[in-house]
Figure 1 (tube, rainbow, N blue to C red):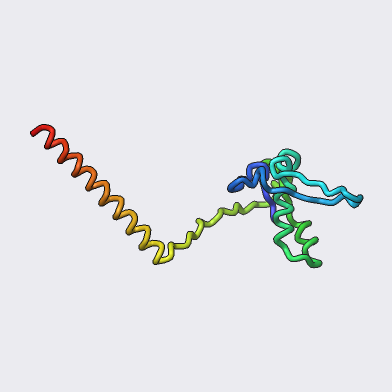
Figure 2: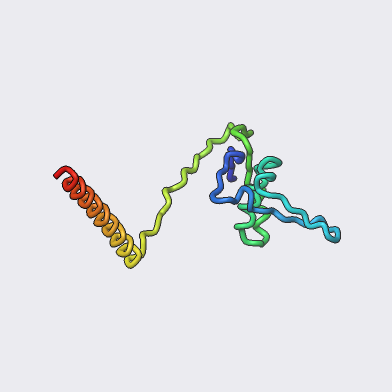
Length: 133
């Protein structure tokens, strides 16, 4: 069994809160409904996680069994106090290094900026020396 706590505290990147839309059809002609992620979080935050998990699973007979074993709670309270819960800690993100050509270009640009700054400082010192002389 998988137990998810604090579903109301999820964070999303970018503009997904306003741009992500959940669609469903009522079965009547022209009744395609939609709801933004922000509105869905206000209405029922557990459904956001449930839909995200179920849409990642393959559409087969085991999907319903896995859905029954997924328990989501919007707060910290849950009825499974008698079972020991194992907290899951997200591993650190593996950020891919830059491609060598792009990295060399970035280093060249940084060196060029440093050289320009040094030249400007030197010119400023020379101008100040000429004014005092």
